[in-house]
Image (cartoon, rainbow, N blue to C red; front, side):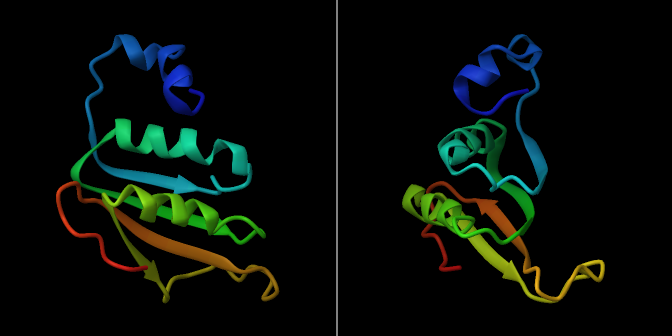
Length: 111
């Protein structure tokens, strides 16, 4: 499946009743900045109130811009996870993990 509404419409998922998910796991999604709005659209499509999105990524100069988009939406609560197993990746490589919860109708919390 490709990201965004057009990617969804072009995928077999659009003809199936997949509904929403309780948990979505995202790994290394924030590497093409121009896709951030489409990734966000896709996450919302498959989320319901209370859906938890686990996100793990290696920092790139623009990675945290995605979290600005989440904040602008005002329907996501973001929690940085500080203590996790980074699999002993090179110490100069910064790995981040977040728990992102879809919370429409609630006041979002700061990251």
